[in-house]
Image (tube, one colour):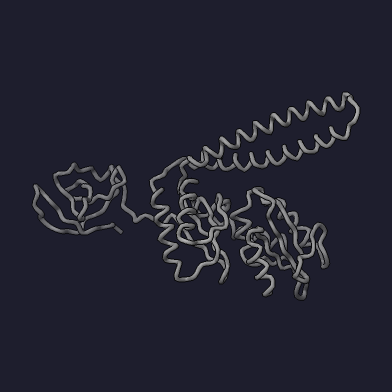
Length: 343
């Protein structure tokens, strides 16, 4: 279907006619209308001036209405929601500031690791239905400001991966450094082993400083890197299907799979913990503790790859016995415990 628009056609300062003309996207991205074999820019007042320089249609692209660069994924009634926005890290930060300025409760934000639509996720607290229009307006304004930002998909993907890898390297190096310090402190005599440990400490300290400097430089690049428009995929649905097949005794509740797909750069710890749970008949799973104030529920903490505030809550229920599982973040604990209390 050809996109058309009613414009006034002006020549030598006098308006000749208003006609429905075929629309094009001009080489500079502006909207243009075809007349007499050439495409002319549409001026303010919805008119084209034949005195302007026309461009052959072959140098233009088809005009399509820009698609939204954001999405709202509400949670269950009265619960938090995910917002997804496209653009740079600066665009995400700008959106967060606008949301906070409008009174929305922003819980956290970060790269959308699910690969779905939107480069960034923003988790916000529950909002009333009547606020949805204002919320959409904020997202539209924030993303329109960055709609002209282009970039290389591969470069941005590699930058995100490098930042995540750098964070993991820092955690590992700090743990090794701490173990080496404890081992050196336990040696009272000035031995060759102690000297070797001290050299190892110096080398690890130097490497940790280098990694932290590299990570800081990568974050600076990531903040200024342009972002491409991503292609949506079905990661969350695929994870749910895989979990249903490989963990048949687990029922995931609330936004568990959404959280796993969107916010976890490394999911291996979660899958290992859930695999053990799937084999547990009943009672307290190994490595878990009783959830205070909620009889029958167990709790396990895990590292999200970004922090140590990942949470898994589970209980056994039904005949045959199955595990009800909620995977979430500590920041959502108040809402999660309220949901658990109602079950």
